[in-house]
Image 1 (tube, rainbow, N blue to C red):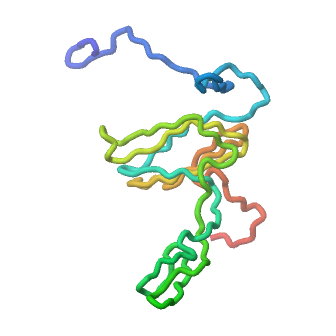
Image 2 (cartoon, helix red, strand yellow):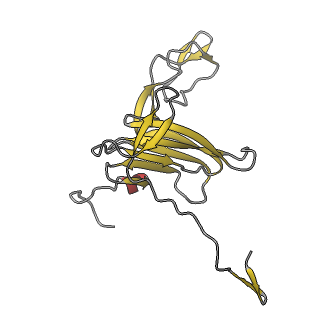
Image 3 (tube, one colour):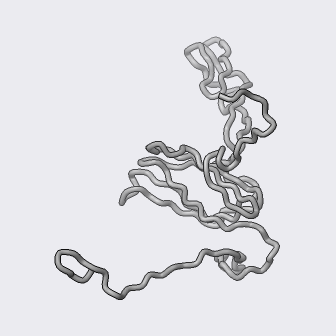
Length: 201
């Protein structure tokens, strides 16, 4: 509370705040007996991994989904299934046409879907994780918070679900070995256009 000075308040000549310096270099040890993680002074000056606290918020009343940064082809989970459909059409997952059978239609043993790599990808180790809830009881949504060990070149993607009010729906994180980059796909990997042909618009 400030000191009264007429109708206003002024700050007294006292009070302190604690400022913590960022961790610039450290080593991480896992104790043998209990498996506890410890931050210690650096043991290997040539280790260029990064300790990253990833706290990427969901949209309002939303959640987050963590993936790798590359998309891969996977077999459709419904391929070759014995499930019989009463209607003609195609799979909403892979787009393959159903095959007519005696009682209706079934999914052929074919079809692929494109999906993101599973998280964590190569070069990323999850040391610990928690959850940050929206609202007092967490019923409004929330997102995961992770402490990661990232090797040079490691990257991941976080899809932000919920009301974003114009903010990006995806955030990418890349550890280059010297810098930690966070942004949209084009911000982290800017398009290269020096030798590209095209028309100025």
